[in-house]
Length: 197
Image (cartoon, rainbow, N blue to C red; front, side, top):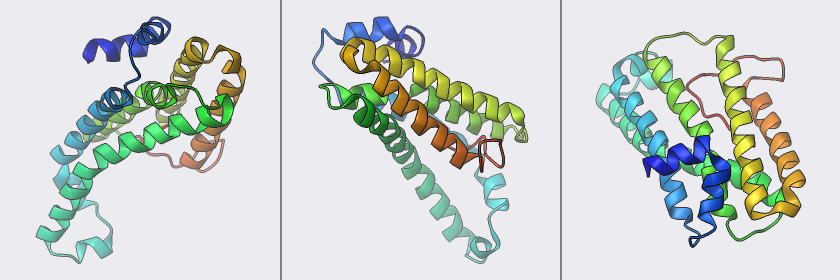
């Protein structure tokens, strides 16, 4: 699995070309997304005390045991949910721009790996107490471009006649997600801890 992660991230053309010789396996691709999402959840659990100390006032009115239990359950459910949201964020623009093709579910998961690892990096940086900075926007934008490169390479292998439509749909979707995440196209209050597309 780790070798597949590395090849998908850094040698996508070879990786997607090699997938052609195997039966589609969207479950394995989802597990690849689940790994960094789960690691991010574990980082959150490790810093539970500092996160709970910054809880909103209405949450602090709850008993400490209830608040801590809710945090643990939410964090443990959050890893699989984050992976599912990333998968959907990869699937939607592929479906809209490139139409239906045999491995769309698998490709959607593999192409979102940079976003999953960027989110994990955000959790780790936040755990170290580093405040958000303009570098946050640069890292998230880099993640979007990296995902776009994987989308391009995957479509060249699996749906070569629809590369342009798929990449355009992905780019428009990614710009929308970035604009929502940062309160507008010029920047704003995005969190390094949050999900990126």
